[in-house]
Image (cartoon, rainbow, N blue to C red; front, side, top):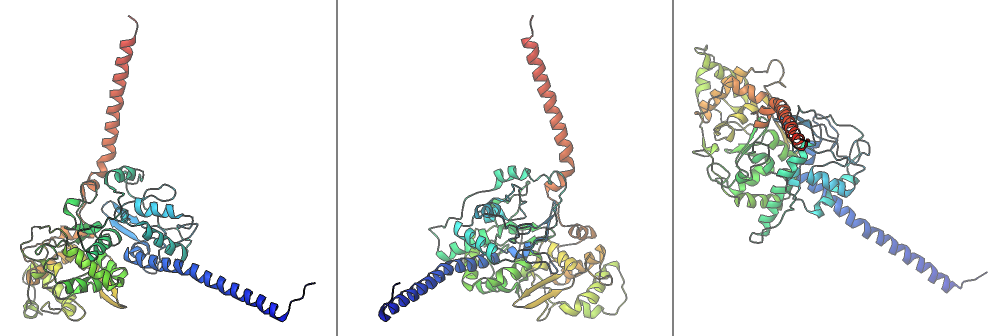
Length: 474
């Protein structure tokens, strides 16, 4: 048996201790890049607003899906993107994940609808895809819960048709920095065009529901909501805003005397924009400042309309003399207490004049805010307006005529008086907004397809019969 001297024993112990220390350091060094990758993925997922669409309202599990996205073709329910191996992306490789995010195709080959903004995410870099994958696989809690199934009417229920749509309208090009622009502008462009996917809502769409890139960021629709022009045009867009106002709006969703975020934009502020770094918010402002201005039909900026009105105070308590005065009574009973009798608002509720919702030439956002209310939380402080539409309590629920009348009162007293609202406008917004060509044509697509198929079969039959007559013996 070997015997060690005390000196040799000390050397051996020292070597073991050194090896143990090296192993610990190596393990720490190996885990540090992974932790940094996950942290970056967490920030990117927040910037991409993943939680807003993939978390069901009223207590839904984070990223477990089930959120109903209102589209002109029907409600599209988001999928479970937790690392659940049963219902989520637990079996996805990074390549599977990249294909779903950037090409809109799930692991099993199912095509996703473009309510998932993969047309914008297609620009994401490989590095950012890796970071997102690391975050979802390692930090998000798996939830073994199936999300609600999307059931669109025929022919949109045939998901395979999206393969043709993708061939026509999906670009697989990654974001390429513009060498002629500043680093700040390029960062803002990457955020706006890829992660924040601004064009998804703020760009008009063609007959096939693809973005009309010729009019990028000049305004679009999101179900019942209107996404305004955010190009650098000084009248129709954000060219008349100061940098400080743009930063404040992106950060909080509210700028006194300008605008406040509601609907999908409020969700974006709550779940994404308020959490961006100051540097990234400034980069977004730099990018928006540098966009191509696109003019609309506006004669003056939307936020420049209106002034305080004394009508409510002078009419209060008097009996109605005309049907039009229903709007005043609704305003006095449901609106004046928060927005003030003269429409000037207060620290918690915005003024009704110098407000983009009341100064627009399109009343959809005003109607939507009345029907669906407003609810966003910034810095832990909720900003809330009750809904007066289908989700309101029975005593607060307003009819289409009530909403039209109070909208007309508000517009005539505080906003763009040239805009008129009828009960049919309210009914349209209540039902999800204007129907695009595809939705209007949907009932006729199947019959037309059958007729075309019959014509083709008859034509083929005639060609075959003629060919047989030619080869028949004399």
